[in-house]
Length: 262
Image (cartoon, rainbow, N blue to C red; front, side, top):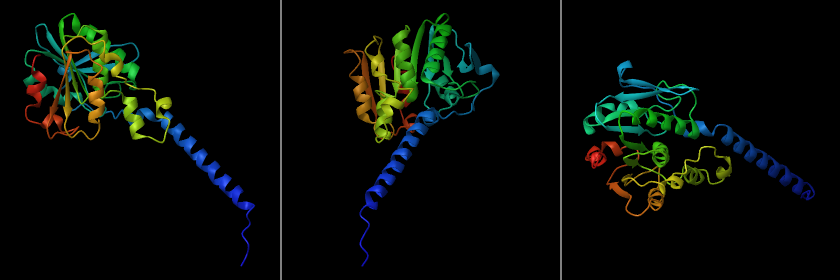
């Protein structure tokens, strides 16, 4: 029986190890380069026409906002999820919030808006939108769902919102990414971290957090961790029983819950 060539075994193991390291580094590089395509999933605009659109005055893009004009002091600014066509909310929002002018922002690359989405670009656009609305409607409710909850809480920490509503919110997108890709050094690779907890402590207006009981995307622990960063008495958490992350708005009483106190 031939004797194994022991001297070749370490060399073979070293070759396999080197290939594995190179493959891992290649995957890290791909994750870094293509990370925003894993965060943002642009959707076309499906509801409304030119009469329900507003173009936001920003220097480096054409950012569209689906609107329902309404005279009076109250307005609602809405930021959607990472794969949401916000215009689809216009019919339900118009019924649920009849006393509010509605402004639903299409992120860059979404719904006909030009440019590419990023955390800082979206945040600049959000602040521009708030400033544009505030002159006509001084009582502004800022609302964000899923990814948009991070946009909303940061905006409300920098602008005089009247009320804040966060739907399926998270403590930090970076924490969620670390949970989803545990074998990669995500915390050093991620550009758009959406660390909502950093801004929660600066909120002093009534805030509602709405959580789905069976959320398969954002763990309950992440929402509860965010809640702990608000000052005592500022934020309230409501759980919609039986609902999932994407089915939340189909639940009975969903819009009634959002409208409470607006």
